[in-house]
Image 1 (cartoon, rainbow, N blue to C red):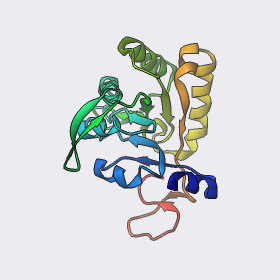
Image 2: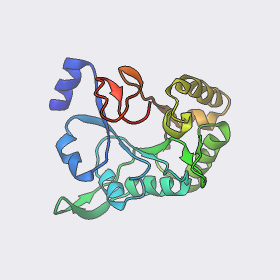
Image 3: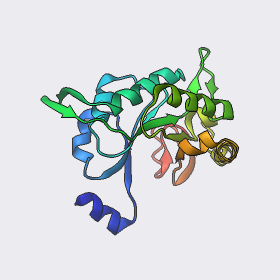
Length: 203
């Protein structure tokens, strides 16, 4: 009830990156989308909790860029489990709308590398075909390593991904949208800067 009221009164729906799995119970009546971050995607509790969530969950590729880790996380979340959550034994039915989020990665030298190019998207299609997962889906995160943390690259990245989708039916079939990062003020503030509406991390 609270979720529908909030959407009706504001016209906005809420999404969240699930940093702490225990907090989801406090937010589940408000959220219509959940993402699991690049560092959390390898955590078994995040995978298990995602299997019991009633809204779509996106699994980001890990910071290493390893598709297998992300695909294993999607597979785990799409299946049912019995596990301990907040001190209780719970059973999940599996979340068939768990899908991939490509956000770029960091190579062995610490350099940021994108994974939104045509070849990367075809590789993801091949992974979905090989694992035969339900409802194959893709969200492209246009910031982070994909944009080399330059927010003004995001528009160009979207255009390139849409161009790839126009030329490949498999990419078009799995592409569901984009994750775009923005703030009220451009740039990033220095530590302790105190500028309202400006990022305290990436620009």
